[in-house]
Image (cartoon, rainbow, N blue to C red; front, side, top):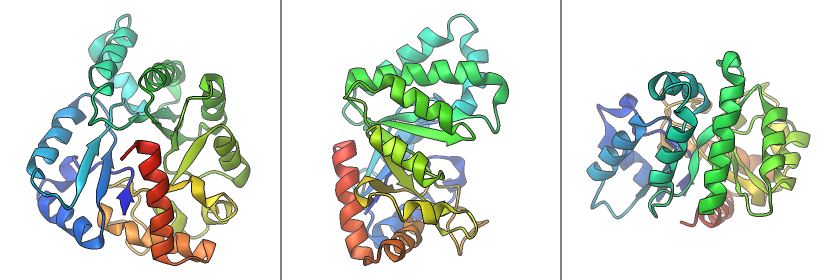
Length: 266
């Protein structure tokens, strides 16, 4: 099983990180992909990878990116004039390394950061260019910015761009637009929420374009809402997806693992 999006390096797990990884192994998870949020993520990801070294039952894979909600703060650190070149240099420093399997998490967030829309878009454009130059998948965050995000994908799609709309929560039409543009959809705890409407949309989408994720420590699935999320909770997402498609959990695991492994070259 593959959790394609989990921030397990965050302080939320500082008291039980090895136990948390052990629970993931017990569930059958063999790969956890860790999207970066900001430059501080690098040391945090390196630490958890070091702590887990020697445990051959599971592989932790870092990714490199600046979260859209972190753009404004990072501009204040790098400077108004220099930040685009600083961002590009920082991404390039890690994006070419084999252990970094993707570019992200990047994207757009108009819920928390409406005042930095232009800066978020420029950051996203820079991430897209790095993804194209390294031929690595890009991991996209979206909150109340769907049309702008889809427009950005279309603008950059030159036949080689690949990636995932992380934490997909859109309509069937929006999901198919992303799929038609060559993207995959990350399916997490939201699929288990009542009245979200996401499950109904996902049920109509091509299953070979779906991959599993938790977004740990966020978005715990029902019946664990309100609690800290972790990769071991992925079975709730897998089970719900199986119910929607009339497939067993084993069939869902085989299909989504195959898709994720190909997308991220695992």
